[in-house]
Length: 328
Image: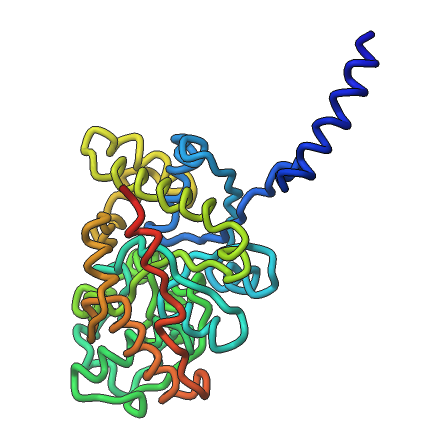
């Protein structure tokens, strides 16, 4: 009798699914590629605290070095990637179309130009070798620092360097300074006795916004699920803003990058995590570094001028503020 009932139920269920257009297969997890920036390591909190499950969406977090995360996204191995806004522009310009749906934070000092002992300011970099990942936002930060001090790229010698090698490159003596973000900038300061941070993103707030960028095809097919991801992210923000959670939060974040909670804590002070209301302001149309649109426009112009890519990207197509606006 059981077999008969099951055999009757299955065809009926299949027929109902066909009539209603409801899929009988479970949706694949949304794949997010992320790397070791504090505002992105925070996605581990969503996983550890069950915020994805709370919002009813399945997410697979894929851990990479930063450039490798962008490569994975460009190759279609991830539905989304955690990138700085300027690198979203580069991906769009080079064929890996993406739309920024969340602003996690802006760098408020974690991105640093670290100079060896004896160099105490940006002007001291004249004629020196600087290790930097050319064509990325670290490169733009360096150019801004030089510009603020009446210098240009012609006044220094750039050495192309993967950011995750910053500490050993500076310690080797092959360069006089490096440009990197945390934890690599902090590691460089520790590895080279007497080194100094001569310029940071705290000197140019808004030059680097950190975002979640999603492939347009995935947005089109699974917009409701990405809205749930956005809701989970603001659960993370609420969690991080509660002082009662600080000890647990630091354990989660530091474990991902192999540091102690005490070692990791300073990284958060250089990362300005943004509340929903702050993000809504950042997502307004505007010029300069106060808004994502303005910052992306400045970065876009910088990359075209420096021949990172030839044609400017249409900035408005790369930002969708609706996911934050829809959060209740």
